[in-house]
Amino acid sequence: MSNALPKTILDTKHLDDLLSTPTPGVVECFARLDGNLLILGAGGKMGPSLTRMAKRAAPHKRVVAVSRFSTPGSREQFERHGIETIAADLLDTAQLAALPEAQNIVYMAGMKFGATGNEPLTWAMNTFLPGMVCQRFPKSRIVAFSTGNVYPLTPLRLGGSAETDQPAPVGEYAMSCLGRERIFEHFSRTQGNPIALLRLNYAVELRYGVPVDIAKKVWNGEPIPLAMGVANVLWQGDANAMALQSFDLTTSPATILNLAGPEQLSVRRMAQFFGERMGKTPILVGEEAPTALLSNGQRLLAHTGNPHIPVQSLLSWIADWVMRGGESLGKPTHFEARDGKF
Image 1: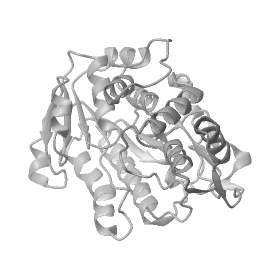
Image 2: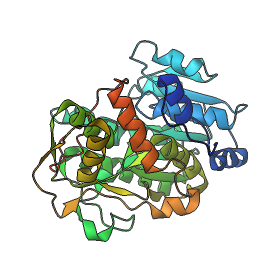
Image 3: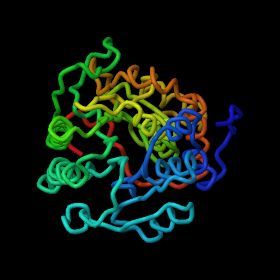
C-alpha cells in the first residue's frame, strides 16, 4: 500500500479501490496459504471489499463469494473483478451441500440489524448455521467474524475488554453471537477445524460507521447522545487486512481475537472535530457514562502491525464526504445503544 494518502476520496470507485488494496502482510500471508478461498455471507458491508482484497493479494487463487445477492447488481460487483459467485441460502441444507470444497473459509454470515422482533431467525443465523457450516466443511481452516458485543460495558480506565475477559452479552443479539462462538469452538475441538474467531469493534469507511453517524448528525443539526462516550474506530480496509492475515493464527481449539484499532475515540471530540470542519455547532446531549463497549485489539495488532490509515486521515475523509453529499449505506450503527437492542 502506498504511503502517499489522498487528501480526499473522489467517488465510490476510488473508495472501493482503497478499501480493497491488500497490505504487504496480506500478500505474504496468502503466498503461504494453500488452497482456495470461500467467503460465506460475502454480500454484507465488509464482504465485497474483503473478497476483492483477497483476490488482489493472490490473483491466481480461486476465490468464491457466496451470498443471496438480493440487491440488484451486487453479484456483478464481484464478477467484474474475477471473483466467482454462488447465489445460495446457507440455511438451505441442499444449497449448502452443493458449495464447492474449500480449504479456507471466511465466515461473514450473520444477523444484527432487525434482530429485535425477529429473534428466531437471529438465533438460526447466528448459532444454528455455524454448526451446519462446520459439518459441511469438517477439515477447513475458518476465520469467523464475531463481535465485541459479547463483552459487557467496561470502565473506560481499563482500556477495553481483552480476549481473556469473561463474556457477558447484553440482549439477545449479543447472546446469539456468543452462541455462534461456542458452536465454532465445539466443532474446532471435536473435528479439529483450525479456527480464529474475530470480535470486531468497529470497522469504518465513508458510507458507514460510528464517525459517519456522528458527522451526519453534526451536518444535519441532529442531537448526538453522549452516554456511550467512547468508541473503537478502525478503517475498514485495515480491518479487511487484519481479518485475512488471521489465517496465520487459526488453531484447534479455536483462537479468539479482538479485531479493533489501537485508538478509542471520544464521541464528544469527534463531534467537535466535525463541527469545526463543517462550520456547525454540534448538538451534544447528556454526559458520558463511566463505561462503554470497548475492545482492546493489541493481541491481533501484535501480529498484523498497526493500521495503515491513521484516524486523522479517516475523519478528514469522512467530513469531506458528508459535506459533498457522498453515498451512504443508510445503516446507522446504533453505537449509542446500551441495552443491546439492534
